[in-house]
Image 1: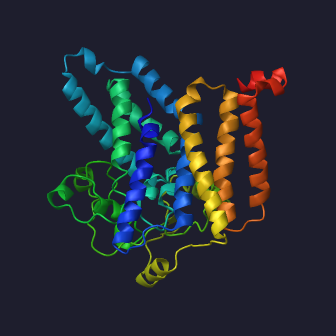
Image 2: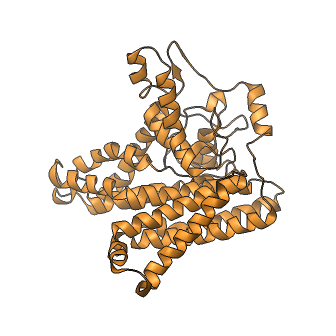
Image 3: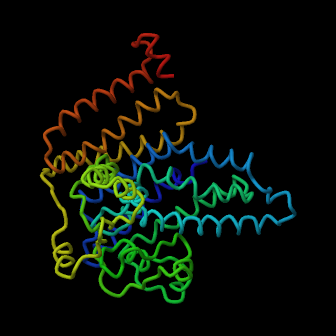
Length: 390
């Protein structure tokens, strides 16, 4: 059972509610191109991270639990309720340290930065997830397998931790009083997504903000946050969003003279360069970023409607793929995944007026039609093709 996949309709419904509330309050918290980019990152992350790579993390946890655990918490007399409490708290603590490392280690930041690209802050941003963060998190969570946390408790606790963090991505919820002392709230997480100098590398919590208070990374929300990354992506393309920072590190490393620096760059803080470290943005730069977000949109209302239609179809296809990926052949799963990724990439090309957008869209439509025929009209395909699709 994939709790995240089952929650997709609820996510979309809550995004609609947030949009309606914002309009009632005369606030603009969504831009279509940015929101579609967020959702395209979420869709492709589910395809790449869950369908193609997700089994690696699960397999690693199951193997370590079976072969390397110190004990099984179910067999040492611990009550089930305490095991679940340990699972929820343990996952949340591990999440804090993985999340903190993902902001302080360049290689991990290269995977995680996708979640921070948006210059807006809304529930769609919660779905802006990265392809490779599931892989970077594996070594951290294996600690719980060694300590004997049963796999069902781990997998459900991890899903609960992820689901909790959806609602904190909004500007429409203010201070929550005493809850701010204990829980990670929208106010705390707005700080985390901000590029104000005082907000950088703060508030890493998943569910409990007490970890940040305990380990010295807490910062309350005071100044108005400015969202995004200190070096903006300036693209709505989900493929480039997931790959660009790896390219940036490689280019920067190539320009360094000492091999020690070339190697250390991959593990240093993202702001590190030989001899100095970069800080946050000055107030004039923050004001400029707040007033002029990346908003390249060259589409007509008809094309926007077409993109929204394709977004709905791609969301449905992703949900079906997540539900049936374990029973699909590898060939069919790869073909379906490639088509969904192509779909999301096309949206960015259409918004930004790229020359390759329509040729890629026509190729994608042809590929989608061929795949549908292979699945629903098998009599028209050679037997070798059908065997591969199965």
